[in-house]
Image (cartoon, rainbow over the protein chains, first blue to last red):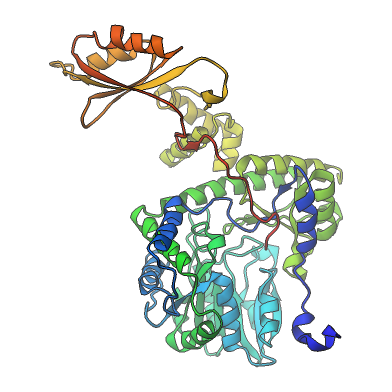
Length: 393
Length: 164
């Protein structure tokens, strides 16, 4: 059979993720330290695991409502209000998704008509651009720069908007740069959007992970922006629950209804055991004033500083990332491309990082190093990286 | 501010007491001098008492038994439990003494070469003290977790080595 003729050409044309090659090499390498991991090294709390086990013992192994357990939706709305000052109605403005990733897909498919343009900062998380293509739209990367601390600037946004612009993906705290957008920065973005019909897909999965006393600001909390914002969040990063695949999407009821319709026909509901686990994470969080979250943040912050200090010693410029768990040092002074730097660092010093170009063209000249890895390993990896960089003078 | 730094230093050292002041300075964003001064002050205040390693003695081939002993005592006028606690914790065999709420008063951990010498210590030294009303000895068979550290942690880092 000629599969090329059978398979959807638009989807087949999307290249596979650029990190795959590294994955295969690192997996077979002994003593390699990976700074390429995009998930917490913490494990979900035992009380969370136990709640899921208990739910299964109770025989709660059936579907839930399409939107998820009402109790969980209520808890998630209370959490969002308490932590980020945004209010959603648990009955009509939120539903539980299979990771925030499902939310990205649904948001795009709910909005995009063939040929619609979707803006996204570049560099950014690898899924946005393919997601737009899958939905039949046209991804429009908006370059963000180190001198702006990789924030999306109102000028760059204004220049990128066209009559076909349907949506803007706003992923802060950002993977891979670690950039955050503070209130004033978001207000400047809001000024550009006011009076347009552009919808903002605000991917806030790293909302809990900010450093230096700066709390994440939800885009929906900016004056007048709620009506045009789809807020995506989840349990993976905040509660170290990646494998549970639990996220949620929040939006005005009119938007959410359309997303929920697709969720209903394609997914039915988020996994029931995962929903009980998520509920427990929120409950324990609230009861302990989010002690576990705060402990993770303190630990990440220390490793973040270790990395920044090491780059300074290596002479690699790196703006100070204040969110997520990534650093994004500039490696141009080595004269290597991002890809070559990452490959040689891996082969010569057995340290894996991800070339910045995996996250968009403007990632050239940078690599992403994650500090979601044990502190002693981060220290060791930085020593090896120092040795590697030294040869370039 | 200084309190935040103190707590950070304590948390870091509790996790790994080999962490140097220079490393702590990087991790907390303070100067090395500042960190060293805070550590000295914590030592002077007897907040930091010692920098030991946590050892799983079960994996070391030595003869040693350990028991937790519940001790009921009569508190003394003016001294409360402190005087009798001191009489107990002064013994080299005793590795820890806690004052407890509930059915007994002092929880005493004792280490000895073998069961017999431990039993003799309880019979001859501990039970015979004035004010000790009764003892109940429980031998430790296996330790699973101490100070937040699981002894036989089976978990490996099973995460995907590279993920987006």
